[in-house]
Length: 422
Image (tube, rainbow, N blue to C red):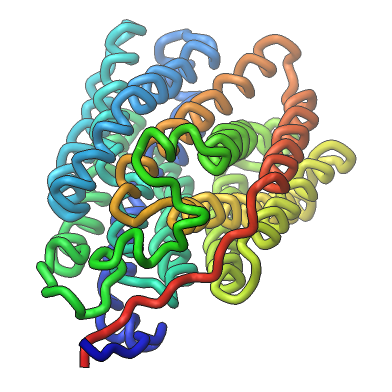
């Protein structure tokens, strides 16, 4: 059958609603991370737990996520992203609201966080990027960036929303209020506009990436079979990055409000400044996504981490004033946005589209472990030294390790274009 190449403009004309719906879904997926710092002092006061004990809830979440993430990825590959995402939104919001019923039992605290972690897997980046990757080829970098910019949007408004909810409702009812807000924001958009190529049941030849799978990827770089994929150098490199960058990121972003308030800023001002991290991360994702569609993915991936290094240096060498806090927030956001976008995009280029759910789910589990290790690390350092200062050196080292690992990645091939039938 005669075919022609589908342009990025044609891809966007057909499927623009998918990344837009993904923004809403991705924005609520970070609720438990970026509201945590606001609830931390209230829970510590209520139950007299140490900050390390409170952060252990995120550790429990991380453990269950790394165990279940590959299996959720398999469900995505088998049933499609839509059938996983829609029910997960309702379950996740319900489990987050359960935190309002907390007592002084650490075991109950861990159990609820395990439930949150389990249900959150259905709205993690793997769901959104898998759907986008089945529909976009030429414009994949920007499409993934737009979809995942929802993470940055959630990071931007969640600290401020949490502060307002806690102030007006109290910390217990704030959990319920935030869960209700998330449900109203995400559920309608995802239900109406989110789908993958599988969900639309396109006939062969209409030009989606999923129909061509491995044929849209050069055989020289895409491992055949899950076993080969997991044993490949590409997976090892991306796994190192997937652990190190969220460890560095969450060790700073989650306790960002306490870090800033301990040096004189009010909690309301600190919450607004923390929101700048999310705004900057959106910009970092979009810039990095556009660059991925035009330049060598390996070079872009390495360069995406440089703002984070700058943020660490400012935290190490400058006193924390309002101006320096804003600069740190902006640089951190740019680095986080670029790192998240880079790992998601490189995964779609290094492995076959048909296996993205399982492979991406595994990498997501590793990211969650790193994300859980970050606040535990920062809380331990604070409990041990009474200061977050040693943390900044560790974060900078982790980011440098990410850049070094990506330097060993093979050159990422140019995107293949899916044909569209005449």
